Length: 159
Image (tube, rainbow, N blue to C red; front, top):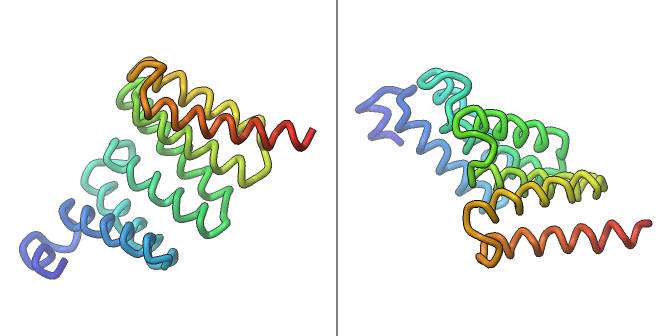
């Protein structure tokens, strides 16, 4: 970070990547406030560099959503995932495979919020996209089927 800041200045996109990586490291260490701060700084730089709707920012929004889930702030997580989907859809269309990951992330948020029907819908949408991309028998599609099965199990237990 020090070397890059000297070389490029504090608001260069390379610095944003380093902030994002530091956020990931702190998230893995369970230091969610620090992770959040680094992700937010990365978004700030990326927004200045690329504008607010660049797909590169969507990845960091996903990361922020992940941190907020771990912090138990599900509404904020949901907002960041929805923003990521908005950017990804605008950039690549509604069936872009990385959107499926974000749909699965939203499904996880809704499970935490106890909104199983919404979780189910997001997992189904993720499966639809992954099936188009990888086929129905691919491991990435199977992982989402597993998530859908778990939500259906919980959903039916509560009825």
